[in-house]
Image 1: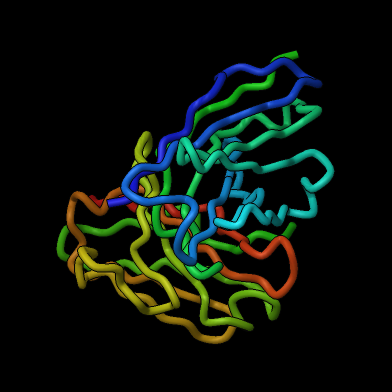
Image 2: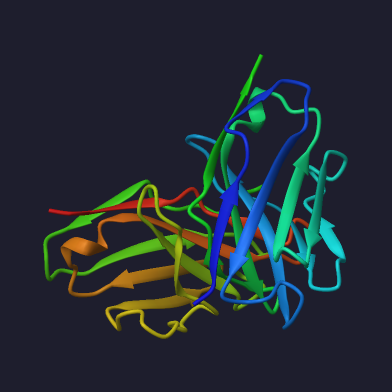
Length: 119
Length: 111
């Protein structure tokens, strides 16, 4: 059973960079036809897909966030990370990492981590 | 970004059936048979319960079923049980980036 766990600071100062890590167990992020994604949900709003990274390291981002977001991976630690720059209060949200199968199905998710942007 | 449309809440008594709709557009729900549904209990990881409109992953009870007509997909829970209480989100693949769009979630209450 694949498991994902988000980690990182719960509080980030405005204008700084938000960085989160997703640790994957029960499967390798470097193999298989899997993509690894970040999804977030601001309070009272819908889930928003932020981007995905393939086992090869190729990444695609939500164009509404593209200038601020980057996803990277560390295969040796079986982790992938999210970096969101120049954060504002609008970036306060629960952030989830998830595995994406065949580009179509988010089959495993982490439990999410609340990140608050403070001014 | 345009999100999918879901009812805010639905409710039913144990044993009854409830249906949650998920309405999109010609570039997502209507264009592809790639709608998935997720069950979420607060503080826990969202769980995939339906993919590709009608398919259930291994281990998901058969009381969960999905369908689609035009730009609207639906999730039906037949024989509602207390543990079915929670939030349910739909998601569709889109023809253009951002490639995935979600609904706002529907709260299911078992009376």
